[in-house]
Length: 431
Image (cartoon, rainbow, N blue to C red; front, top):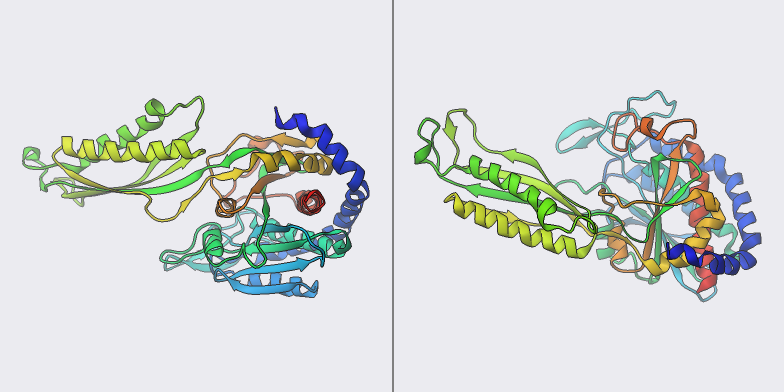
C-alpha cells in the first residue's frame, strides 16, 4: 500500500531521534502497568451511564490533579480536561478517552465485575463497561503519568480529554464529543491534532489496527411517518393502507444499497429497526411509523442515500394514495470517523516502532460508529484499535462488545499507553 512505502524514511527519522525515548516509554509503561490495571478494575467495578459519570469524573480529576496538571471539570456536563504545558513552543496534541458504561447486566465471574444499578429511560437497569471505556480511561491516565515525567522532552502542550456520553446522551439531553466541541474543548489552547484509540475484544493483545480515510461509519437515524385512512380489516378497499405502504417502503429502502450505490467502492447500510402501527388484527390503522439507521463510510455515499430515501418515500406514498414525512436526521447524527491520510502516513512509523511491524495491521472499515468523529471534523485526527483478546482465545470465540459476557485482557492496555505516549512525543518532535 502507498502508506507503507513511506515506512523506511519515516522510521529512519523517528528511530534515530527517538530510540532512547522508545526504550524509556516502554520501561515507564511497564512500571506503571500495575496502576493502569488497578484503575481499570475500579472503573469496571463502578460504571456510570452517559452524562451521569460523576464519581468516575471525580476519580479521574483527582488523579490528574495529583500529577500537577491544570484540570477542568464539568465540561460537557461531566467531562474532565487537563492540560500539560511543556513551557516550550510547539503544537497542542489532544488525547481522548471516553468514560460511560452501558445498560447491560454483566454475566461473567470477574472479581471486579459490576453490580451497579442505574436509571435509564425511567427504569432501574444494571450497568456495565461492556465496550472497554474502562480501559480507555486507564490507558490515558497512564499516558498522562508518563508524559508528565517526560515533560523535558516535550515541545508544546498536551490536552487530556476524558469525554462523557460516547454511547449517546439520555433522551432530551445533549452530550458527548459533539457537546464538548460546542463548548470549546478544542480551544484555549487550540488543539492541532487529536489521537484516540479503542480496545477490541476480537483483536490479539499486542496488535494495533489502523486505516487511512474512513475507519468507522457515519450514523444517521431516520423516522418515517406514513398517514393513510383507517378502515375495517374486512373492507380494505375503504382504506388507504399505511401498513402495506410501509411494507413497500421497507423493501424499497433496501434497494438503495443493492441497486443504486456503487458497492464495489462504498460500503453502506440502511436498516429499519422499528415498525409501529395498529392495535387490532381486524383494523387497518390510520398511521404507521418506521425508524431506522443509515451507516456510510464516505460523504458522497451519505448524500446519495439521503437523496434516494427522500425520493422513494415520497413516490411510494403517492403511489398508494398515502402521505409520508421523512425525518432525516432524526435524533443524533455522527460524522464519519475519518483518519486524515497525510497524518496517518506521518504517524505510521510510530506505530511500527511501538508495536513492531508484524503487529501493526491495516484494518477494514467497520459500520459501527464513534463520536470521536466530531473532533476530526475540526482538526486532523487518528482513531486506532488496540487488541484486548488473549492470544489463546480464537477470535470467533471472543465475546462481542455491548454484550453481557464482554471481556478484554488487562494485558492489552500497556501497548495502548505506549501508543498514546509515543504518538504525542513523535508528533511534537516532527512539528
